[in-house]
Amino acid sequence: MKFCTLCGNAVHIAIPTDDNRERHICKACGEIHYHNPKNVVGTIPLWENKILLCRRAIEPRKNYWTLPAGFLELHETSAEGAVRETLEETGAIVDVGALFTILNVPHIGQIHWFYIAQMTSAKFSPFTSESTEVALFDEADIPWDEIAFLTVKTALKNFFADRHAGKDLLQPGLIPHLTDLRPVTS
Amino acid sequence: MKFCTLCGNAVHIAIPTDDNRERHICKACGEIHYHNPKNVVGTIPLWENKILLCRRAIEPRKNYWTLPAGFLELHETSAEGAVRETLEETGAIVDVGALFTILNVPHIGQIHWFYIAQMTSAKFSPFTSESTEVALFDEADIPWDEIAFLTVKTALKNFFADRHAGKDLLQPGLIPHLTDLRPVTS
Image (cartoon, rainbow over the protein chains, first blue to last red):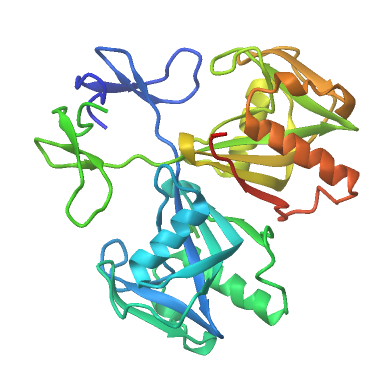
């Protein structure tokens, strides 16, 4: 951020009075501009024993496989956003179920949410404007070495672990995994 | 938003190519500016059988009682933010426990999170820069008609209902209530 959204003049970075963090402050009008973490919402789309994944058509992590997910928009709920992103990226219509996992990713200012979702039919698009390929995977066929993001890999690992443990993954309102991901420093 | 954060020139509102929503777009450099829901994180601070509430020193809803909560900052997790806000608004140091509830509030572009938290001692500040009064309340003494926000009232109602039902509210990772709040239209 270089310029004020309200008056168009230059901002500088300083700690405002009664605050303890550096903010972007307008040199002309004094407006303080805050930046906050964004929510990325998506689903684990299920059809029979399979999971729907999509291969990213865009950066970051282009050509890697991912669960359908994207930035939550204003005026929609987290579940509505997850359903919308699933449709946009895979062409699949889903019934959203339990919130399965929330993964804080503080070093990039994001929180990733994944809901369990049942596909309402076997129908999906083989590709979309956001995915070069969309496909259903058995657990044995998940391309673990080509998963786009650590949050997605974590969600999938936890999903299969819970399924093997016989947990009822459709139970509403249960978050079995609330995880914070941090940069790998070792 | 009237001006571009990158170049300081005027923005206009239009739907970008390959998008279906109106965005703020810079007329000069073409940058698309996205706006997303913000997370408000807080706690239900417990000491013995009581709950710690604070009376707001600032707008909106100045002078009304609330649970300690505020905007999640970059580079912190939802739980870290909840603990920080509790300290800032009440002076109390808490051990954060289970995530109790997430309340989508899409019409104002916010998501409110409340964690169960145990105060580490009976110590808190009778007032802070953000609260004109801080006090422990028995359930019978909660000032229901002076609660600042519907999300706070909802969280408190659900908390007492669950406590009466004998639920283990300290169990980690359980979200008994995932609620979407919408504007009251009737």
